[in-house]
Length: 420
Image 1 (cartoon, rainbow, N blue to C red):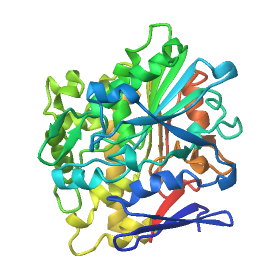
Image 2 (tube, helix red, strand yellow):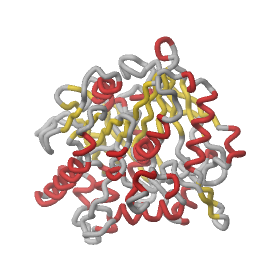
Image 3 (cartoon, rainbow, N blue to C red):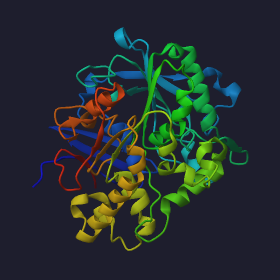
């Protein structure tokens, strides 16, 4: 029996009820969300952290955003959480783009605007900063004293849309939110940065790839600027029924939200806009140094792209979707094919000396913002190096990092996500 840290996430009809065991402690969360995993991104970040020991950081609304039309889906102001840097990190800035899926039609966007993913009225007034956002050197060795900012995600298109639907009272203003937030932070001292890192997880990891060169362009040449995409490598793959679940979803997102004009032109010049929402068609042309961190068996992609219930009407994949240990031989083989697809997608990207890579053979999703996966005594490692140290080595040019794990089930340091 391989040793593994398991995080249990429970499912109930309509309500998502999560409960995972960390050491001897159990945390429970109640939440209604479109996607199981999105419901748990925030709550999972507590894993491995003492609840009463958490750094809670307040929400700042961007007051002048409305004048620029930079508003959430429901027209409320966008916002971020900022914990100031100090000492040697006073002029260093880490910008973290929040994740949380997408909305691809009027129905899902109208639902979303009544949640924290579509309205600042529903956002938590303060959130815990853990993992890459932690202010403790023993939890976050390289970035603990930087200015650390989490930009809240309330547009539903990875900060790329720019249109509206007046009838449904929906504002699709992700690109404007991105611009307004950057302008606001520049005015609050980010313009003096001597080093900066743009990061994000899931839909925020995709946003990081899309906006990486734009972020670079905010700063003078002398500023060290890099980007880190965590669990953002969403692949354009065929699902278990032979269909294109994720491509169909992205088609709705890009079309509805008018994202085309804000996607990297180097891609849209020769590919259709939906293809240019897939990172595999963007990463090779990003000029700024980029680090790709991804689980080879990304839980979100297994659940929502590869084997969603819509592509699996007879429930053949239901058990495997929730718990990798219940996958059959042929199912594991199919998932190994997905991993191969991922490795092919990064082949050209990984040849560049300035880029970094950490692809671990885990069933997980988002590993930078959770303390237990970012940097802890039993964090996931590749060749004995934890994610925080791999990212730090790459950012500060202490070492080149191109870490690709052997295929499942060889890695016994994984913190697999298991749903029930």
